[in-house]
Length: 397
Ligand code: ATP
Ligand code: MG
Image 1 (cartoon, rainbow, N blue to C red):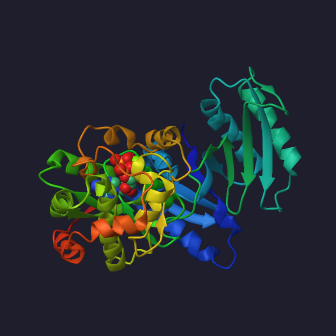
Image 2 (image 1 turned 180 degrees about the horizontal axis):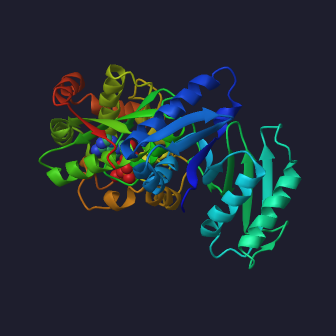
């Protein structure tokens, strides 16, 4: 399309509901957009009228507009986005641009209608008049189309905004949610399973910055299992840009529990150790909450009573964004965010090391705490804490 200036318009979602804090939310949203823009090319990014405008500054950036558009679909805080042709704010330019730009956008379409919106009320035509003019031009350029005001396949929008006019044929849904970094920081307990990456994504979507802690158990768990979890963390950077993973070894703790405590309580005791260690990481890394991928009733350690026993060991609130979701719903999100294929790689997690044959599903806290007292909790925690290593991942394109 010669001479057509194509841009991306991203429209705010919930951010528009914010009052005096709105400026902060907008700044956080723009930071995410600009970080991604830098990875892809040379774009001008600006914000006006609840919309972020992304304009290519050179030919390479124009050519990479598809990739940029895909990235904008992952920015939390946008309700909708579209690609649009921009032109001068006069009728002649608008009609010419519509005729040149829309045939490509409307391939295979049979019915349409036009809607116009004028943020600039100085524009000489009324919205219905402008829609009529553009509709006429479209019919001239694509005589096979018909107008359908009630159930059109495509709504062509003409927006007369501050500096330019924009024309586009349909918008896509944005990622929704709140801008990244607008909701404090949490610590995700990241396993190699399907659930925890989804839990992390859900919290990121609500604006939470997420660090991770992963527990492993060499030599009972393998190098491949470690790599799988690191890959999941790297995949999550698609949504958050950067992610830190703290890795802690539970090997000695697991051996001590195996050797000293009643087998039926093994998983619950291990989960309490995870919570205690995660709480330490959270305190050190300024995370306000723990986040897990637990879902009510999914396994023995996720009955109501078991969750209460686990919760008791944490020293900060535990968020469980998947608590009310079925596995099928979780899998759907997992596929959608791109972590599913990695999650189903068949490597053992430390939870599957020494698993009890008859795990307690209705545990009493006092009984669990009494079992726990059979090992030296504090020194085991200190020892595990000493094994901690950290890896950091950045989004790559
Ligand atoms: P996922 O829940 O991620 O699919 P899973 O089902 O194997 O993995 P569960 O045994 O259900 O894991 O554990 C519940 C939650 O506990 C996980 O979602 C995760 O938040 C946390 N968790 C389990 N194992 C680990 C681990 N090795 N390291 C860190 N967190 C873990
Ligand atoms: Mg699970």
